[in-house]
Length: 258
Image 1 (cartoon, rainbow, N blue to C red):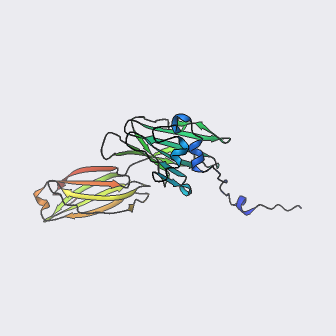
Image 2: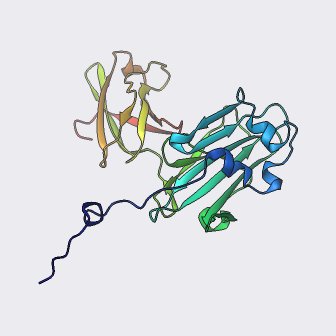
Image 3: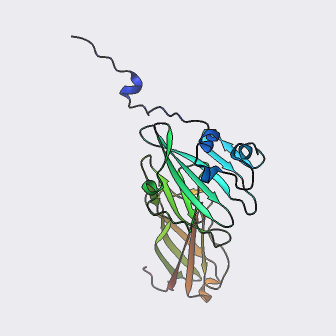
């Protein structure tokens, strides 16, 4: 019988080969309405402004810096599971914020914003990641901007990544201390800060930097100092690495059981 040989890479389900032009060429391939003269020079001249720009070919990223009254332009390639790619282009300035998605089809960039960002809102800023695979959707009328949502790319589509959440909380008085127990959940997020304090006090009682959530909820336990009995409520706050926060307030219980 004839022998059949499979190449090891194919047998193991190797990833499709990835090929794209340099980031500068992708910028030059954009429609004139996006890359045209905007006060900082023609497109080729703007690419040459190395002091204003950030080029990171290894992470498929290009930033063309702006200045007062002139929007900056971010480009980021997101790879598809089949080896193709889409190109996200975000422009942000004092007067406007816009984000466009282009899909590579047979070597040409075709507009595809509605297909990949069906809930796109022109009133928000879409900040592209230099690393990672999530677009941060941010406010533009607050200083500093607040991250409202994260859109996670999975090789096929962008899906919303839920913010970290406090899923359970209780506080119990024990002698001169108040013991606080709470559950925080947020798979895929990194917890930057956790704090708890009795209402009317400013002390941070627990802080955790770069703490990555596990898939399941995690339990945190802290004890408030002796001054806590003067209060009747506890405030707990959590914040992830993108600045998304959640706060919760709970009354202090004198009961032995939560």
